[in-house]
Length: 584
Image (cartoon, rainbow, N blue to C red):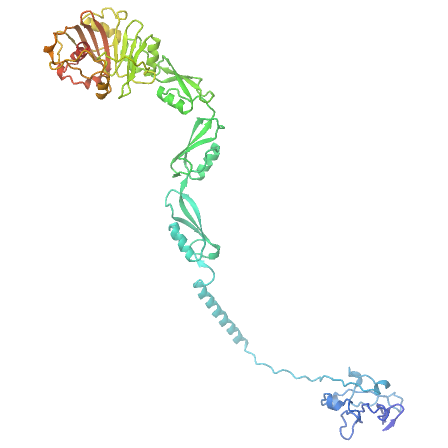
């Protein structure tokens, strides 16, 4: 092998190896030992250097054993043939080494840092031992089963998944609220109108027996009483809807004249806010324009009450008609007519007027107001008028145009009355308890002054009386033997009120001190009585000398039945004649 200094080449046989510059020229250069050196033919070492800072590749760079087959192959052209033929490989293939680069003269004159080449041979990690697939699957199943069992147990213990809603239906509101709140539910109450089981729970949301989140709360439906809603001021239709919604099943509507718009509810019964049950009748009073209400066919008293309730006043005009007495046959304005509030409505009322003022039984079939109007029309003037303290009947006296005297009294058998008060008690509605009619000479019928049964019957015909039962005269009258009735009974009103509200005594008796007085004058008379329907009548003709009178009286039979007739041997005719003639 020859060495060429000029080209820094080493020639061995057919191979040419590039050599570094002469060490003497570059003492810091790194010189690779000749291949196949005696010490380490395959190794690369650094040349000795006097520079202490020189890098020693052999000591500091990592080294590894390289097999000859692993070395790269360097192809060098042969010197003999000028590089035409390939030289045999020395095991170093520089073309395959990514880190190899042909040296340049400049590079060979300076030190270069060693290059670390990673080994192509790497150590593999130790392989872990794995479980069989079936064992892993079994382990997963066991873990899942354990987790499921744990979840089931905690769910059953209601540690999660909500709480079971208890059955509170049928409990009271207080008990149900307490039961739910103990489980953590916030309770709200929904009142449900009901006719029964008031205060009890009818339902619950969530449904009892189901699981629910207590934080979402619970609502209980509690039975509560029905209450009349606010309907006053609403229209009739709106009020009906409100009542039906509240549970009302029976609604009645009445109308009343009002200044409010027609159809507006004025009142409700039961009143607003009052409890009621669904089957109870609820009455609405609805406004209507002021119109004359339908009072036709009503009695006078009922018609006047109806008008008063509607805000009207009334007047009465009596008419003759075949309709029932004391009933309304017409109105003015007519029924249904619109009128102003408070208008006066004229009522046409049927009156069975007496054919004559002496038609005494007809006085009981006419209303007191009609009787007052009739007497006025017939020319009678009021002389006395009062109302009995008990019973409310009239005690009045009217004088006719021909001097006849008509008395209305609970005790018509006596003609006494107190003068002074002249109140028109009949117009105020005072009742008729009995009638006493004293004929004047001008009104006396022919033969009516005869002291005989014929005279009695003449008066009966004039008064419309029938069914004569008995007569008595001064010759056969049974007089009371123990008492004598004083003649003056004009000032005994106080005693009458105590004895039943009369201004006359019920059973006047004779004064028993007969010996102290002279023998009284004996009147001459005839008296007869009879019964007609539910009334008892009597006629007395006669009197004391120069004072003959003709009187007819009528009263309900029950009035005479209440009199003690034992002192007159039970004879009513004797009692009437005695009181009329002897007691005055």
